[in-house]
Length: 260
Image (cartoon, rainbow, N blue to C red; front, top):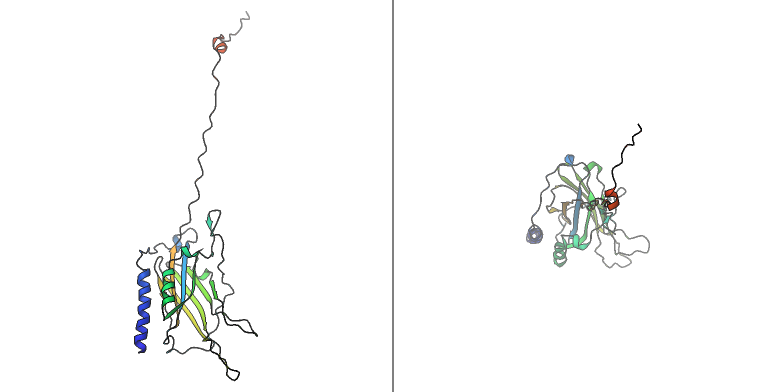
């Protein structure tokens, strides 16, 4: 029975991947060393959770798996996408710029998956050792009179480039079953799952990072800088010359006076 449920879940993932891979993809071929400056990419990430009863049931989970370090991470901001004709890095892109919207909808309709976080943005990409992590956070709806609620989802996404693109994820999910407890019962708190994965990527290809409870779809596309507007060519100056008058044309040429 458990095997059948897992196979059914995998079929949903395969269906989503098939729908998203119909469009032609461009593979990344240029190396970072050949770039005069850091290349720009457009990234899109969809984080989701497995909600089937069997999800994560065969794994042993640590009570305290630690927390992702977000001290050096960057928060995506909202606002204008360009300034003086140039793109602004780490700006969240609007819905029309995203390509995984269909996958989000399919998961919302599924009984086995629940989409959690969907973002897209543009940025220059450096060597993995110098890459800046992108912070992700999803607020908790659980209220407490004694302490601030912990995020449902938090962590980092880090993209770097050598010969290929590299993705590094460190994501923490807190699952609160929201059970009603009486005064004599002990609340064990949410179950915590941590996903730490590394993946080599190719531009234009959809990548799927698997986990017993969490999952990540990620796409990276090379972003070409918009060409600067062409400046109009300066017009040649027109020098007007007045035609000679009839008097000037009839005046005899000057002669050297004879002093002898």
